[in-house]
Length: 388
Ligand SMILES: C[S@@+](CC[C@H](N)C(=O)[O-])C[C@H]1O[C@@H](n2cnc3c(N)ncnc32)[C@H](O)[C@@H]1O
Image 1 (tube, rainbow, N blue to C red):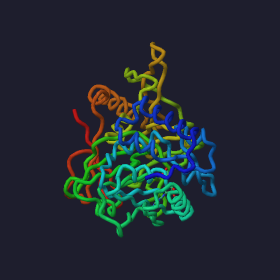
Image 2 (image 1 turned 135 degrees about the horizontal axis):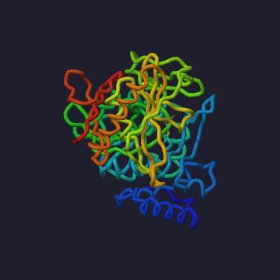
Image 3 (image 1 turned 120 degrees about the vertical axis):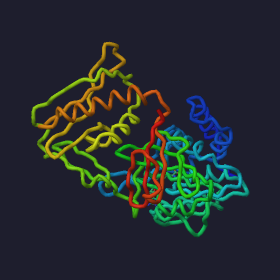
Image 4 (image 1 turned 90 degrees about the vertical axis):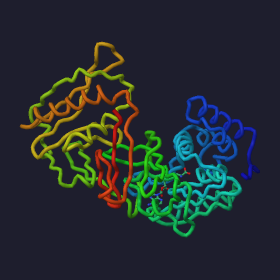
């Protein structure tokens, strides 16, 4: 399907090396996904990038807003591959992509095959104009490119067997659920309590059930589905709460200047061990949970009250590759907050650390929710459950 007219020995060999990397590191398992990566000339979709950058396993930034925040990119190949594996697009599928760039739409067009179809929607006309041009140039002229707020899907071409969202979303928009076929699948980088996971959900009746999750990072959704977080300045740091935690109090910005109390849990973790499952466990069990951060990449689980704050801390363990988890706090209620957090650290360690991790369900109505930790969104409810 692709027009490889301007392909060269060099781009072919760079592309083959990228695919070898994705297979070797265990990102690509599905032969059909590998074949799609082989077919689509990635360099065409990032014309400004040198060839080695176009074929590196790295994101290519395309646009920043006035304050320097990245608003558009052509995603990192390994994230794209993980999400395509999650989406399991079948020949003949009707696919909707939210967030365009052209490259991923072309890959999905390969996977959907001659009897399938791909529609890609972006809120930014500059992005859709470029995607249209580059898709035409590379032989994917039958991908439909729509300029609109993806929070409303693309009703004119619904229903879809697969919806793949390539921008961080705080919830499953009700339009996506309406436009998804019964037993269809939606893959979405879902942000909950300050962390983002790509979740593959299957539609089961009127609700969604997660089938797989993988950690990821994307630019944030603009438009009607934007801004579900509340930022509270704390000196040079900040606390982040989700919109449904509007009633949660927080301490004054100078709370960190109060004397610091520190306690340790006895729970040791490998320095490299991802702790996002632990963080989500704490989010579901500790009232006042929030994320304390300094800049975009450094953040830690915390619990806040009107006068006190406690947060996760670590110290080197006897084995140098391990650290012990603890909790530090400031303010009159610090001892109580620290006790609670240490209790939950130990519970997670004993009951969930080696388990399958959390599962997620999404419902449109409050009266049909299963038991679990509920995150309330504008259009829907996310339920988090943990197998014992
Ligand atoms: C990471 S880029 C998409 C990458 C792309 N899928 C690719 O092929 O690599 C995210 C895109 O989402 C778009 N976006 C942000 N908010 C949106 C919204 N509400 N509806 C549709 N697109 C949106 C941005 O303009 C940006 O181009």
